[in-house]
Image (tube, rainbow, N blue to C red; front, side, top):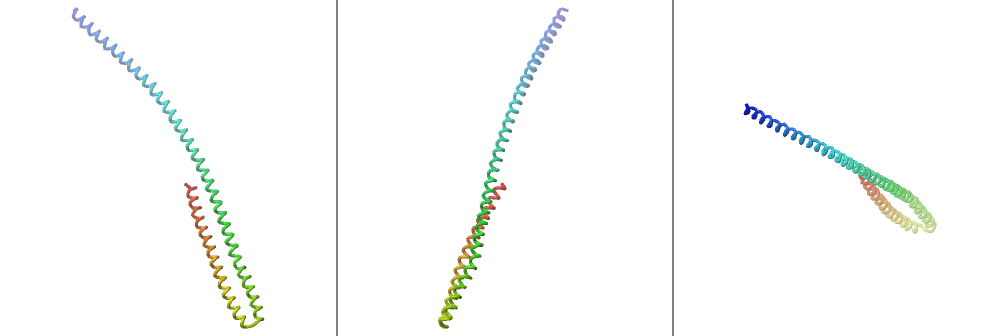
Length: 176
């Protein structure tokens, strides 16, 4: 009977030891879970702070970029307006030059005709010579005027092409 009692006591001691070991394990597990919860909460707070800081930096950078793009857009618009004004001024100058050419030719021809009439009175032979000189003068004037007009028109066309390319490039930049 003592043996049975000793066996029972031994079993009770083993069970008690197992139960207290189990309680110790549960206490350690509880402490680990509590520690992990604290670390997780601390990590979440730090991550939230970091993400907020990143979001603020991204927003500030976006605002700066928007401000720069706005400045570039205004500068390009100003250049486009200046180029359009320069083109209009050049076209006005060419139009006035071309318009004045006809009047210049007309005045030159009138003067020559007056001289021809004066010379008609002097003699018929001189008249033939003067008409020939007048024709040569007219041809020379036409050549000079055509050359100048073509040069002026070519220069304006070249200016127009250059301004058009510049305006298109600037509009492409503004669109970007």
